[in-house]
Amino acid sequence: MLKGVEVVDFLPVVYLRSFKALVLADVHLGYEEELANAGVYVPRFQLNHVKKVLEEAFNAVDVSKLVIAGDLKHSFSGLGKVEKAELIKFFTYVLPKVDEVVVVRGNHDNYLPTLQRRYMFKFTEALPLGEYLIIHGHKDVVEEFSGWRYLIFGHEHPSISLRDSLGKLGKFPCYLVGELSDGREFVTLPAVGAYQTGSRITLNSETYISPILKKHALIRRIKPYIIDEDLGVFELPQLEYLSNYIVG
Figure 1 (cartoon, rainbow, N blue to C red):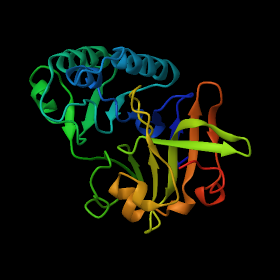
Figure 2: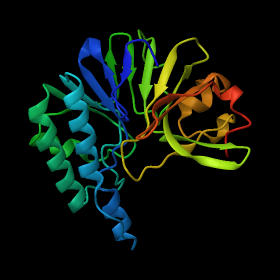
Figure 3: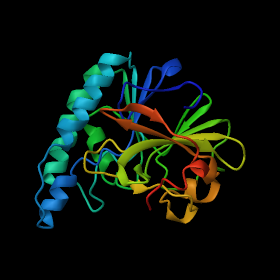
Figure 4: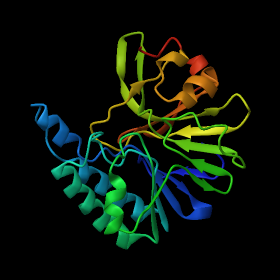
């Protein structure tokens, strides 16, 4: 993992100990409501899932600052009734537990600032913390900010499908840790949202969603870190050594 960046237990969140900052991405509250509006009905547990993740993290580390690296909500076109209710429950839950909540704008976070009238959270395009820069990852902003060494972002929902000689082993959410072409380093966060299963990890830069990975990452040197309830955090070799084992 990156210098000063810790995975908390077996969770899809990282901790910057020097800032007492917990960072997560891609919660997508309101996802079930959007599916229901399209006639697809799934169990509604996204909010409970993220609260469980946060409760475990709060019990494991001392958190002063909670940072959501984009896509706290799901709907592009507005603020759905259920989505708004879940966001209110989310802020009601987290605000008493930390000194500051920061939401870094993601491409799904339209209309979120309307809740700032009632709930004291910071809303920003990017969050610099010393050597670290936290963004969502849906825009190519590598050259827009200076003074950072380590980039933390989401958006990709990374997961890796592996196989052995007998066939497919499974699909696992993962962190992606690697280098940019200018020598700086990054970590891509897995999605916290229970239904956001992830885009596939390959050796082809064109298959990636984030322009950061498409344009700037040294893809072959990326190292995935699987997170799994049974395996824990499992470090894999760089992608260039996994070409015979990646399904995709």
